[in-house]
Figure 1 (cartoon, rainbow, N blue to C red):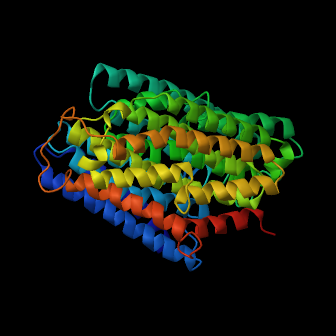
Figure 2 (figure 1 turned 180 degrees about the vertical axis):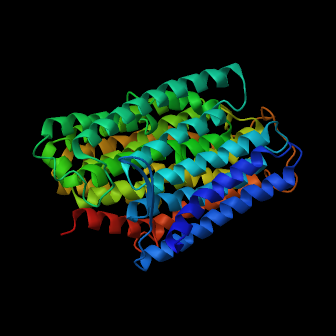
Figure 3 (figure 1 turned 30 degrees about the vertical axis):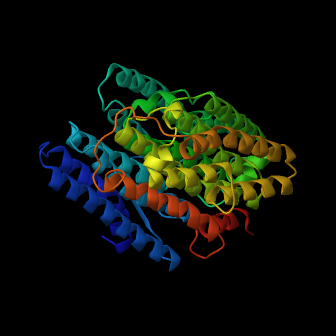
Length: 498
C-alpha cells in the first residue's frame, strides 16, 4: 500500500475502528471507552496533519476500488476536501471530549459513542470522496449513523423527531440517487474535477443539466436545511447537546453545504453553472433561507431551537457565497464553512452547559446566568457576536467577503440580504446577552447541580473556551498564512484562475 493510500484510509479507519470497538464494550467500561474515543480522535488529527503536509508538498493522494462495471469508489484529497476534513477532525476531538463529560453516568453510552464515531467516519468520507458515487455512499451512511443519535434519549418526542429526520433525509437521498444516476447516464462516471467535469456535455444537454442541477440542490438541500427542506432540524434539537453540536457544526448540515460547494465548483464548474443560468436562482433560494431562518429564530424561547433556526440562516451563507459568481464571494462562502462551524459549536457547547449544570433550556430562564457561569457565557458571547458579524471576529470576515463579492458581481440585492440578516442576528442574540450579563439572577436555578471547583465539569468547560478562542483567532489573524481564509483563498484562486 502506498503512503498516500495509507493516510487516506487512516483518516477513515481511525474513527471507524474506534466505533466498532466501542460497540462491544460494557457500559461500565468508562475509562476504556473514554481512552478509545480520545485516542481515535487524536490519531485522526495526526493523519490529517500528515495529509496537510503532503498536500503542501505537492503529494497526490488518491485511492480507488472498482466494485462493479462502471462503478468505482474513490478517495482523494484536493483543496476543498482538505478544508472540510480538517474542520471535521479538529471539531470531532473537542465534541468527543465534551460528550464524555456530558454523558457521564448516562445509559447506553457504548451505543452512543459507537454511532458517534461512525457518524464522523461518514463525514470524513464525504470530505474525501473523489467522485459522485463515493460521495453518495458516504452521504447515505451519514443518515444511517446519525439517526440513532437523534433518538438516543428514547423518549416519545425523540422517536417522533427521529421519524421526521428519516423522512426528510431518506427523501433527499432518494432524489440525490436519481440525480447521480441520471447525470452518469449522460456524462458517464463523474469525478470531482477542478473547474468542473461536464464541459464535454454542456452544449449537447443544456436543458437536462439545468433540471439536474436543481435535483441535486433538492437532494443536498435537505441536509443543508434550505427552505422549505429545513423542517427536520429544529425537531432534532431533542437530541443531547453533543449531538446538536455534531449535527450543526461538524456533520449533517455541513455535509449538505459542502455537497452544494462540490456541485457548483467540482461537478458543474462555476463558469458552466453561470453559463446555464442556475446560479442566480440558487442565490435567491439561499437569500430567502437566510432571512427566513433569522425571522423564525426571533420568536423561539427554547434556546436550542433559537440556535437551530440560526443555523438554517447561517449555513446558507455558504450556499450564497457559492452562488454569487466571482472569486470574492466564493472566498467568503467557503471560509464560512469553517467560521460558521466554530461559532455554532461554541454556542451549542455553551447551551449544553447551561442545561446540564443549571437546568436552563429557555432564553427566559437565562437572567443573570453570566454571574453564575461567567466563562461559559464569555464563550457564548463571542460565538453570538461572531454570528452577528461584529469585527474582528470570524463571522465578520465571511460576511465582508460575500458582500464585496456581491458588489463586484453586480448583485446589489445580496448586500441588502446581508444587512437584514445581521440586524435580525442582533435582534435574537443581543437580548440573550443582555439577560445573561445585566439582569439579576433568580433565587434558584431550574435544576442546579453540584460542580465542585469550576462552574461546570472541566470537560464541558474546556471545549467552548477553545472554540471561542478559535473564533477570535480566525478573525484577528484572518490575513495570516495559516488562517482558514488563506486556505479558502487557494480554493477560490483555483476555481477562477487562468
